[in-house]
Image 1 (cartoon, one colour):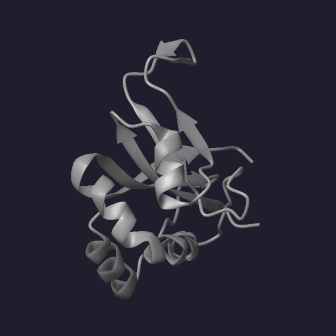
Image 2 (image 1 turned 60 degrees about the horizontal axis):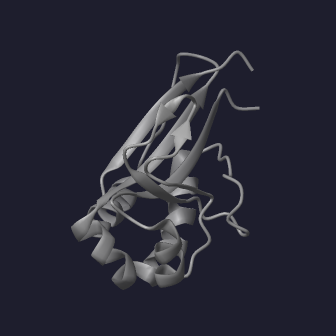
Length: 134
């Protein structure tokens, strides 16, 4: 097993109604949050709609290579790009990438072709690092 695993999600947050995004875009989110609700003892200031590209939308897939996860997610999102552009222009959007590592060496590599694809999508990439003894 690799000492590095990755998950990827496309997230829209802010003053949004997650169910309306699901209806408009036609993709089943892996997670939604509503502003004003409490999560882990904190009141949420923003609503969230998160899509992982999983077939049923319920879970978040893990990948041994970050690039594989991002390519998979882009493959699901690109056909919906015109519908997504409204949210990119009017709300906070991000490709959220979880990097789960059990060693301090190595990390993700992103090819120039993937960087170009991400740039044309117009959404920032955020890599969140987590250390695990697994």
